[in-house]
Length: 295
Image 1: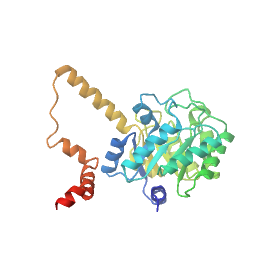
Image 2 (image 1 turned 135 degrees about the vertical axis):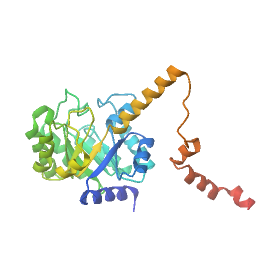
Image 3 (image 1 turned 90 degrees about the vertical axis):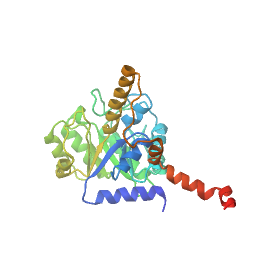
Image 4 (image 1 turned 180 degrees about the vertical axis):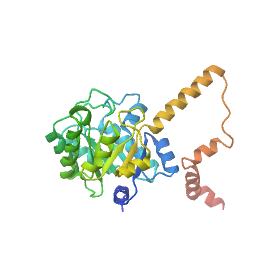
């Protein structure tokens, strides 16, 4: 069985199971590996983090190819399913078709496509615009038809709550499910009441996006599960902590002109082990013809 089918099938099975999936956000091989090593069962490739790692704000400035390339890095760095931001699908229905196939070919298990006007922006910023219901539904229908692996998960994201209101967002989520989307993602709900109402009013599995400092209230993960959400993503969790840590370390260096000693037991070799050095060492030993001849 191919890696594409294996990852997609694993994620599909997780969606069918009873426990809510929690997917912290990764934007490179480091964050992806550490999420898996921490015991989480899925990874979310954050578009905001991917943009920031390339020096841009989350203003829809990256191309489909750049997003796909980064998703491939996450997939090859880990063994758990990767869910990826796929923005607006990068154009019309034909572009959406190619988008689905490119992500699918890289072993990504699921993507979400949204109804913002391109270029989009972070769902927790003001100034968003959305396309018509009809255009959104057409894109989701194209995404569903484009997948070659029936287990590949299509998530329909609507940003219409902040533009057209809560009822319109619920209506769009249900329309997307009607044309074959597997999961609905109502972005930017503004209260606990709205948050709880999404799984009650949307006729299918729902995704919750928790962004510290964003528009949506923060809740404990068990509370999100109790509301009925099947998947919760935490896009900015690691990015926020990395920014804080980098600022602190650079400030300390500037102030003290002294490198701080690493934590007890932290070594260069130990760091590389977290990235598979022992596996690569073993492979080298197995393939080293010189070592075999000497034996």
